[in-house]
Amino acid sequence: MGGELLIAALFFLLACVMSVFSAANLFIAARETIQLTWLFAVFVMLSSVIPKYDLRATLIALVLASGILTSMVGVYEYFWVREPVDMLVASTRLRSTGIYDQPNAYGSFLIGSIPLLAGILVFDDLRKYLVGRWRAVWPQVSMRPLLWIILALLAFTLAATFSRGSWVGWGIGFTVLFFLGRSWFSSRRFFAVVATCLLSVSAVLVDVSFQPSVIDRSFSNTQRLKLLESSWKMFLDYPFTGVGNGNFSVLLPRYADEELLESMQRDFDPVEKKFYRNPQKQPDIEIVHNVLAQVTCETGIAGLLTFLAFWFFYFRKVMRTLNNLQSSTDRFLVIAALASVAAMLGAALFGWPFTHGVQELLVLQMALTMTSAEPKA
Image 1 (cartoon, one colour):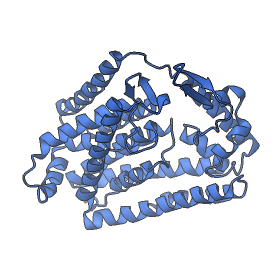
Image 2 (cartoon, rainbow, N blue to C red):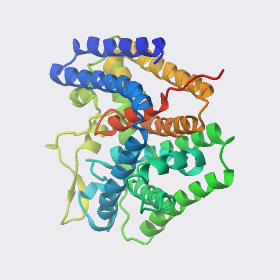
Image 3 (cartoon, rainbow, N blue to C red):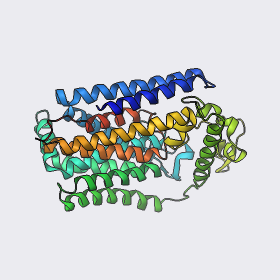
Image 4 (spheres, rainbow, N blue to C red):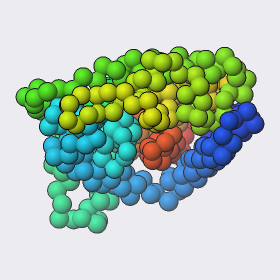
Protein backbone atom coordinates (compact mmCIF):
# COMPACT_ATOMS: atom_id res chain seq x y z
CA MET A 1 0.00 0.00 0.00
CA GLY A 2 1.35 3.42 -0.96
CA GLY A 3 2.25 5.97 1.69
CA GLU A 4 0.01 8.63 0.12
CA LEU A 5 -2.98 6.27 0.29
CA LEU A 6 -2.34 5.53 3.95
CA ILE A 7 -1.92 9.21 4.83
CA ALA A 8 -5.11 10.20 2.98
CA ALA A 9 -7.06 7.47 4.78
CA LEU A 10 -5.75 8.54 8.18
CA PHE A 11 -6.60 12.20 7.55
CA PHE A 12 -10.12 11.22 6.44
CA LEU A 13 -10.57 9.19 9.63
CA LEU A 14 -9.28 12.20 11.58
CA ALA A 15 -11.95 14.37 9.90
CA CYS A 16 -14.54 11.78 10.96
CA VAL A 17 -13.26 11.95 14.54
CA MET A 18 -13.43 15.75 14.52
CA SER A 19 -17.03 15.59 13.31
CA VAL A 20 -17.98 13.69 16.46
CA PHE A 21 -17.53 16.85 18.54
CA SER A 22 -20.25 18.71 16.61
CA ALA A 23 -22.65 15.77 16.39
CA ALA A 24 -26.16 15.97 17.78
CA ASN A 25 -26.00 12.24 18.51
CA LEU A 26 -22.54 11.37 19.81
CA PHE A 27 -23.23 7.63 19.90
CA ILE A 28 -24.13 7.43 16.19
CA ALA A 29 -21.15 9.57 15.21
CA ALA A 30 -18.75 7.44 17.24
CA ARG A 31 -20.30 4.20 15.95
CA GLU A 32 -19.99 5.23 12.30
CA THR A 33 -16.41 6.45 12.80
CA ILE A 34 -15.44 3.17 14.43
CA GLN A 35 -17.03 1.26 11.56
CA LEU A 36 -15.02 3.20 8.96
CA THR A 37 -11.83 2.67 10.97
CA TRP A 38 -12.55 -1.05 11.15
CA LEU A 39 -13.19 -1.22 7.40
CA PHE A 40 -9.88 0.45 6.67
CA ALA A 41 -8.08 -1.95 9.03
CA VAL A 42 -9.69 -4.91 7.23
CA PHE A 43 -8.64 -3.43 3.88
CA VAL A 44 -5.02 -3.16 5.02
CA MET A 45 -5.05 -6.71 6.37
CA LEU A 46 -6.65 -8.26 3.29
CA SER A 47 -4.36 -6.33 0.96
CA SER A 48 -1.42 -7.96 2.70
CA VAL A 49 -2.84 -11.44 3.31
CA ILE A 50 -4.59 -12.28 0.04
CA PRO A 51 -1.52 -12.35 -2.24
CA LYS A 52 0.67 -14.02 0.41
CA TYR A 53 -1.62 -16.94 1.22
CA ASP A 54 -3.43 -17.11 -2.12
CA LEU A 55 -6.93 -16.94 -0.67
CA ARG A 56 -8.25 -15.36 -3.84
CA ALA A 57 -9.99 -18.41 -5.33
CA THR A 58 -11.75 -19.14 -2.03
CA LEU A 59 -12.86 -15.54 -1.47
CA ILE A 60 -14.16 -15.18 -5.03
CA ALA A 61 -16.05 -18.46 -4.67
CA LEU A 62 -17.66 -17.13 -1.48
CA VAL A 63 -18.65 -13.90 -3.24
CA LEU A 64 -20.31 -15.82 -6.08
CA ALA A 65 -21.96 -18.30 -3.72
CA SER A 66 -23.45 -15.50 -1.64
CA GLY A 67 -24.68 -13.90 -4.85
CA ILE A 68 -26.41 -17.13 -5.88
CA LEU A 69 -28.10 -17.62 -2.52
CA THR A 70 -29.29 -14.03 -2.20
CA SER A 71 -30.49 -14.09 -5.82
CA MET A 72 -32.71 -17.05 -5.03
CA VAL A 73 -34.26 -14.99 -2.24
CA GLY A 74 -34.59 -11.99 -4.57
CA VAL A 75 -36.30 -13.97 -7.32
CA TYR A 76 -38.75 -15.43 -4.82
CA GLU A 77 -39.55 -11.95 -3.52
CA TYR A 78 -40.05 -10.55 -6.99
CA PHE A 79 -42.59 -13.18 -8.04
CA TRP A 80 -44.38 -14.15 -4.84
CA VAL A 81 -44.05 -11.46 -2.14
CA ARG A 82 -46.40 -8.44 -2.09
CA GLU A 83 -45.26 -6.38 0.90
CA PRO A 84 -44.16 -3.78 1.77
CA VAL A 85 -46.54 -2.14 -0.63
CA ASP A 86 -44.32 0.89 -1.22
CA MET A 87 -41.78 -1.45 -2.84
CA LEU A 88 -44.22 -2.77 -5.44
CA VAL A 89 -43.43 -2.06 -9.09
CA ALA A 90 -46.77 -3.58 -10.11
CA SER A 91 -49.68 -5.08 -8.23
CA THR A 92 -48.12 -8.54 -8.50
CA ARG A 93 -44.39 -7.76 -8.57
CA LEU A 94 -42.12 -6.56 -5.75
CA ARG A 95 -38.68 -4.98 -5.99
CA SER A 96 -36.11 -7.57 -4.89
CA THR A 97 -34.25 -6.86 -1.65
CA GLY A 98 -32.52 -10.22 -1.18
CA ILE A 99 -31.24 -10.48 2.39
CA TYR A 100 -31.05 -6.70 2.75
CA ASP A 101 -33.70 -4.39 4.09
CA GLN A 102 -34.06 -2.37 0.88
CA PRO A 103 -33.44 -2.89 -2.85
CA ASN A 104 -30.78 -0.21 -3.40
CA ALA A 105 -28.40 -1.88 -0.94
CA TYR A 106 -29.08 -5.23 -2.59
CA GLY A 107 -28.39 -3.71 -6.00
CA SER A 108 -25.07 -2.36 -4.72
CA PHE A 109 -24.13 -5.82 -3.52
CA LEU A 110 -24.97 -7.43 -6.87
CA ILE A 111 -22.99 -4.93 -8.93
CA GLY A 112 -20.05 -5.65 -6.66
CA SER A 113 -20.22 -9.24 -7.90
CA ILE A 114 -21.35 -9.09 -11.54
CA PRO A 115 -18.33 -7.27 -13.09
CA LEU A 116 -16.00 -9.68 -11.27
CA LEU A 117 -17.91 -12.64 -12.71
CA ALA A 118 -17.91 -11.01 -16.15
CA GLY A 119 -14.13 -10.67 -15.90
CA ILE A 120 -13.80 -14.36 -15.08
CA LEU A 121 -15.85 -15.22 -18.17
CA VAL A 122 -13.98 -12.99 -20.63
CA PHE A 123 -10.41 -13.64 -19.41
CA ASP A 124 -9.42 -17.23 -20.24
CA ASP A 125 -6.34 -17.28 -17.99
CA LEU A 126 -8.27 -15.99 -14.98
CA ARG A 127 -11.07 -18.52 -15.50
CA LYS A 128 -8.61 -21.42 -15.87
CA TYR A 129 -6.75 -20.34 -12.73
CA LEU A 130 -9.94 -20.19 -10.65
CA VAL A 131 -11.61 -23.26 -12.13
CA GLY A 132 -8.46 -25.29 -11.57
CA ARG A 133 -8.66 -24.55 -7.84
CA TRP A 134 -12.42 -24.94 -7.57
CA ARG A 135 -12.33 -28.35 -9.24
CA ALA A 136 -10.12 -29.57 -6.43
CA VAL A 137 -13.23 -29.21 -4.26
CA TRP A 138 -15.98 -29.90 -6.83
CA PRO A 139 -14.36 -32.08 -9.52
CA GLN A 140 -17.72 -33.32 -10.81
CA VAL A 141 -19.08 -29.81 -11.57
CA SER A 142 -18.78 -28.35 -15.07
CA MET A 143 -17.75 -24.83 -14.17
CA ARG A 144 -18.04 -22.88 -17.43
CA PRO A 145 -21.80 -23.43 -18.05
CA LEU A 146 -22.40 -22.86 -14.35
CA LEU A 147 -20.70 -19.46 -14.48
CA TRP A 148 -22.92 -18.36 -17.37
CA ILE A 149 -26.03 -19.50 -15.49
CA ILE A 150 -24.90 -17.57 -12.40
CA LEU A 151 -24.37 -14.45 -14.54
CA ALA A 152 -27.89 -14.67 -15.97
CA LEU A 153 -29.35 -15.22 -12.49
CA LEU A 154 -27.48 -12.29 -10.93
CA ALA A 155 -28.40 -10.00 -13.84
CA PHE A 156 -32.08 -10.97 -13.60
CA THR A 157 -32.12 -10.26 -9.88
CA LEU A 158 -30.30 -6.95 -10.28
CA ALA A 159 -32.88 -5.90 -12.87
CA ALA A 160 -35.62 -6.96 -10.42
CA THR A 161 -34.30 -4.54 -7.79
CA PHE A 162 -35.31 -1.63 -10.05
CA SER A 163 -32.44 0.27 -8.43
CA ARG A 164 -31.61 2.90 -11.02
CA GLY A 165 -28.38 3.90 -9.30
CA SER A 166 -27.22 0.29 -9.36
CA TRP A 167 -28.03 0.07 -13.06
CA VAL A 168 -25.82 3.13 -13.64
CA GLY A 169 -23.05 1.51 -11.61
CA TRP A 170 -23.50 -1.66 -13.65
CA GLY A 171 -22.82 0.26 -16.84
CA ILE A 172 -19.78 1.96 -15.31
CA GLY A 173 -18.34 -1.37 -14.18
CA PHE A 174 -18.71 -2.96 -17.61
CA THR A 175 -17.22 0.13 -19.26
CA VAL A 176 -14.12 -0.10 -17.03
CA LEU A 177 -13.85 -3.83 -17.74
CA PHE A 178 -14.01 -3.25 -21.49
CA PHE A 179 -11.50 -0.39 -21.72
CA LEU A 180 -8.92 -1.90 -19.38
CA GLY A 181 -9.22 -5.44 -20.67
CA ARG A 182 -10.01 -5.08 -24.36
CA SER A 183 -6.42 -5.85 -25.41
CA TRP A 184 -6.56 -9.29 -23.78
CA PHE A 185 -10.05 -10.66 -24.39
CA SER A 186 -12.22 -11.30 -27.40
CA SER A 187 -14.79 -8.57 -28.02
CA ARG A 188 -17.17 -11.33 -29.05
CA ARG A 189 -16.86 -12.89 -25.60
CA PHE A 190 -17.44 -9.54 -23.88
CA PHE A 191 -20.53 -8.79 -25.94
CA ALA A 192 -21.81 -12.29 -25.18
CA VAL A 193 -21.61 -11.34 -21.50
CA VAL A 194 -23.41 -8.06 -22.19
CA ALA A 195 -26.06 -9.85 -24.28
CA THR A 196 -26.69 -12.35 -21.47
CA CYS A 197 -27.24 -9.50 -19.02
CA LEU A 198 -29.51 -7.63 -21.44
CA LEU A 199 -31.63 -10.74 -21.99
CA SER A 200 -32.10 -11.06 -18.23
CA VAL A 201 -33.03 -7.37 -17.93
CA SER A 202 -35.44 -7.68 -20.87
CA ALA A 203 -37.13 -10.65 -19.23
CA VAL A 204 -37.87 -8.55 -16.13
CA LEU A 205 -39.06 -5.50 -18.09
CA VAL A 206 -41.30 -7.57 -20.36
CA ASP A 207 -42.73 -9.40 -17.37
CA VAL A 208 -43.55 -6.14 -15.57
CA SER A 209 -45.14 -4.68 -18.70
CA PHE A 210 -47.73 -7.47 -18.63
CA GLN A 211 -48.58 -6.95 -14.97
CA PRO A 212 -51.55 -4.76 -13.96
CA SER A 213 -51.54 -1.50 -12.05
CA VAL A 214 -47.98 -0.27 -12.14
CA ILE A 215 -47.60 1.93 -9.05
CA ASP A 216 -46.28 5.44 -9.57
CA ARG A 217 -42.96 5.99 -7.77
CA SER A 218 -42.26 9.43 -9.23
CA PHE A 219 -42.14 10.90 -5.71
CA SER A 220 -38.74 9.21 -5.32
CA ASN A 221 -37.10 11.66 -7.75
CA THR A 222 -38.47 14.69 -5.90
CA GLN A 223 -37.48 13.16 -2.59
CA ARG A 224 -33.85 12.70 -3.60
CA LEU A 225 -33.53 16.26 -4.84
CA LYS A 226 -34.95 17.51 -1.56
CA LEU A 227 -32.50 15.33 0.37
CA LEU A 228 -29.63 16.94 -1.52
CA GLU A 229 -31.01 20.39 -0.70
CA SER A 230 -31.24 19.45 2.99
CA SER A 231 -27.66 18.17 3.03
CA TRP A 232 -26.49 21.44 1.47
CA LYS A 233 -28.25 23.45 4.18
CA MET A 234 -26.52 21.32 6.82
CA PHE A 235 -23.15 21.93 5.21
CA LEU A 236 -23.70 25.70 5.18
CA ASP A 237 -24.39 25.60 8.92
CA TYR A 238 -21.45 23.25 9.68
CA PRO A 239 -18.91 23.80 6.88
CA PHE A 240 -15.76 22.74 8.74
CA THR A 241 -16.67 19.83 11.01
CA GLY A 242 -19.97 18.76 9.45
CA VAL A 243 -23.04 17.72 11.41
CA GLY A 244 -21.32 14.59 12.68
CA ASN A 245 -20.56 11.26 11.09
CA GLY A 246 -23.85 9.39 10.58
CA ASN A 247 -25.91 12.34 11.84
CA PHE A 248 -27.61 13.33 8.59
CA SER A 249 -30.73 11.36 9.51
CA VAL A 250 -30.72 12.81 13.04
CA LEU A 251 -30.93 16.41 11.80
CA LEU A 252 -33.02 15.75 8.70
CA PRO A 253 -36.41 16.61 10.28
CA ARG A 254 -34.98 20.01 11.25
CA TYR A 255 -33.73 20.80 7.72
CA ALA A 256 -36.37 19.07 5.57
CA ASP A 257 -39.02 21.26 3.99
CA GLU A 258 -42.72 20.44 3.98
CA GLU A 259 -42.63 18.69 0.62
CA LEU A 260 -39.80 16.39 1.70
CA LEU A 261 -41.49 15.55 4.99
CA GLU A 262 -44.66 14.72 3.11
CA SER A 263 -42.81 12.35 0.78
CA MET A 264 -41.27 10.57 3.78
CA GLN A 265 -44.54 10.26 5.68
CA ARG A 266 -46.40 8.20 3.10
CA ASP A 267 -48.52 5.23 4.13
CA PHE A 268 -50.75 2.97 2.09
CA ASP A 269 -54.44 2.45 2.70
CA PRO A 270 -55.19 -1.19 1.73
CA VAL A 271 -58.93 -0.49 1.62
CA GLU A 272 -58.80 2.60 -0.59
CA LYS A 273 -55.79 1.23 -2.47
CA LYS A 274 -53.96 4.54 -2.36
CA PHE A 275 -51.20 6.34 -0.49
CA TYR A 276 -51.92 9.00 2.10
CA ARG A 277 -49.86 11.18 4.41
CA ASN A 278 -49.42 10.08 8.00
CA PRO A 279 -47.99 13.01 10.02
CA GLN A 280 -47.28 10.63 12.93
CA LYS A 281 -44.86 8.56 10.85
CA GLN A 282 -41.22 9.13 11.71
CA PRO A 283 -39.01 9.68 8.63
CA ASP A 284 -36.83 6.60 8.23
CA ILE A 285 -34.39 7.84 5.58
CA GLU A 286 -30.79 7.53 6.75
CA ILE A 287 -28.82 8.70 3.72
CA VAL A 288 -28.60 11.57 1.24
CA HIS A 289 -28.45 9.09 -1.68
CA ASN A 290 -25.18 10.64 -2.81
CA VAL A 291 -21.92 9.62 -1.18
CA LEU A 292 -20.14 12.93 -1.85
CA ALA A 293 -23.00 15.02 -0.47
CA GLN A 294 -23.22 12.81 2.61
CA VAL A 295 -19.49 12.95 3.34
CA THR A 296 -19.58 16.73 2.89
CA CYS A 297 -22.52 17.44 5.18
CA GLU A 298 -21.43 14.97 7.87
CA THR A 299 -17.65 15.58 7.99
CA GLY A 300 -17.28 19.03 6.41
CA ILE A 301 -14.95 20.27 3.73
CA ALA A 302 -11.95 18.56 5.34
CA GLY A 303 -13.74 15.22 5.19
CA LEU A 304 -14.66 15.69 1.54
CA LEU A 305 -11.14 16.67 0.46
CA THR A 306 -9.46 13.79 2.28
CA PHE A 307 -12.13 11.36 1.05
CA LEU A 308 -11.47 12.39 -2.57
CA ALA A 309 -7.72 12.23 -1.96
CA PHE A 310 -8.04 8.66 -0.70
CA TRP A 311 -9.80 7.51 -3.85
CA PHE A 312 -7.38 9.41 -6.09
CA PHE A 313 -4.37 7.70 -4.50
CA TYR A 314 -6.17 4.36 -4.49
CA PHE A 315 -6.85 4.41 -8.24
CA ARG A 316 -3.35 5.68 -8.96
CA LYS A 317 -1.87 2.85 -6.89
CA VAL A 318 -4.01 0.24 -8.65
CA MET A 319 -3.10 1.48 -12.13
CA ARG A 320 0.61 1.45 -11.23
CA THR A 321 0.23 -2.08 -9.89
CA LEU A 322 -1.58 -3.11 -13.06
CA ASN A 323 1.20 -1.77 -15.27
CA ASN A 324 3.86 -3.73 -13.33
CA LEU A 325 2.15 -7.12 -13.26
CA GLN A 326 3.83 -9.90 -15.21
CA SER A 327 1.32 -12.63 -14.41
CA SER A 328 -1.70 -12.57 -16.71
CA THR A 329 -3.81 -14.11 -13.95
CA ASP A 330 -2.94 -11.29 -11.54
CA ARG A 331 -3.49 -8.67 -14.22
CA PHE A 332 -6.92 -9.97 -15.15
CA LEU A 333 -7.98 -10.34 -11.53
CA VAL A 334 -7.04 -6.72 -10.85
CA ILE A 335 -9.05 -5.52 -13.87
CA ALA A 336 -12.12 -7.57 -12.94
CA ALA A 337 -12.04 -6.51 -9.29
CA LEU A 338 -11.41 -2.87 -10.24
CA ALA A 339 -14.47 -2.97 -12.52
CA SER A 340 -16.51 -4.13 -9.51
CA VAL A 341 -15.10 -1.33 -7.33
CA ALA A 342 -15.91 1.22 -10.05
CA ALA A 343 -19.45 -0.15 -10.33
CA MET A 344 -20.05 0.16 -6.59
CA LEU A 345 -18.63 3.69 -6.49
CA GLY A 346 -20.77 4.66 -9.50
CA ALA A 347 -23.87 3.46 -7.67
CA ALA A 348 -22.67 5.37 -4.60
CA LEU A 349 -23.43 8.61 -6.44
CA PHE A 350 -27.04 7.60 -5.79
CA GLY A 351 -26.55 5.87 -2.45
CA TRP A 352 -24.13 5.14 0.40
CA PRO A 353 -21.65 2.25 0.06
CA PHE A 354 -20.75 1.97 3.76
CA THR A 355 -23.90 0.43 5.17
CA HIS A 356 -26.25 -2.56 5.00
CA GLY A 357 -23.38 -5.02 4.74
CA VAL A 358 -22.33 -3.77 1.29
CA GLN A 359 -19.14 -2.23 2.68
CA GLU A 360 -17.50 -5.61 3.32
CA LEU A 361 -17.82 -6.57 -0.34
CA LEU A 362 -16.41 -3.20 -1.42
CA VAL A 363 -13.40 -3.66 0.86
CA LEU A 364 -12.84 -7.21 -0.42
CA GLN A 365 -12.88 -6.10 -4.05
CA MET A 366 -10.51 -3.24 -3.23
CA ALA A 367 -8.14 -5.70 -1.58
CA LEU A 368 -8.24 -7.96 -4.64
CA THR A 369 -7.11 -5.02 -6.77
CA MET A 370 -4.00 -4.62 -4.62
CA THR A 371 -2.55 -7.95 -5.79
CA SER A 372 1.21 -7.93 -5.28
CA ALA A 373 3.57 -9.28 -7.88
CA GLU A 374 7.14 -8.93 -8.97
CA PRO A 375 7.53 -5.79 -11.11
CA LYS A 376 8.65 -6.01 -14.69
CA ALA A 377 12.37 -6.21 -15.21
